[in-house]
View 1 (cartoon, rainbow, N blue to C red):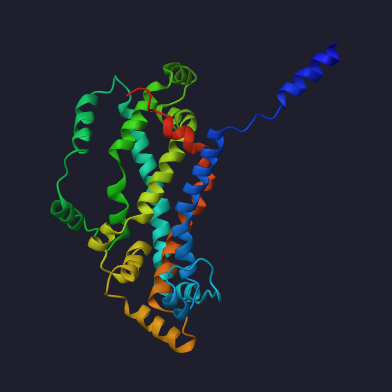
View 2 (view 1 turned 120 degrees about the horizontal axis):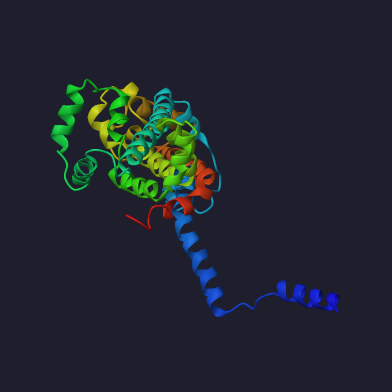
Length: 306
């Protein structure tokens, strides 16, 4: 009798559900959407590994006939591009850590209702979401601080993002007060509570915002164009903009293309542009899989209560 019931339950548990029309439509739509999203990246990649003759014969290349990675060899062999890549990586890593520390610590402090002047500071911070001093005062501030031609001009102003601060403050407000009270009874200081209790509980939230911050900092080029005139200190995105958008191509890249054209005819302006775009995309693509498991949970944290 028991065996019959177990067999019936097992059959019911592993019974294959019939496929309905909605499932077919849903899967088909998602596959189509995936192809639409991947196709531009694939075309950019294939355009970066073909010769000039094949590219100008058919600019939209699905599958290259004679692939070559000469454009990537020239890009990674250029000292200025490699240096700019390292500078961008440094700015992204240090800027993200700095942003997480400043924004999360301020959000944690202002989540305490007993903090003197809390409402005043919240009003000041909220105003900056809608009004700013403008570009000219911003430039004068950076210049008067002596940060011109310094990579710190690209890091220090990004310590606080107000929208992220509001979400973090909302999350910290929802944490049980008993956690901190019990820690204080055990002799923990405020800094120890923040570092050993609050931050570990905030891992999905911090991981999500670190991804947002890394993407934002890595793709930023406007501040570098204004504050960094020294070519040896320019980040990768600014160099990428010079390659892709500006007509003022750096002289070393012009020499690079001329030398490549004379040697094998595969290094041309479009190939360098496409290869540079792919190189600029890869770091973020490599970071996302490590933070993906926190992304869905972290994006919903703090959205229930304001």
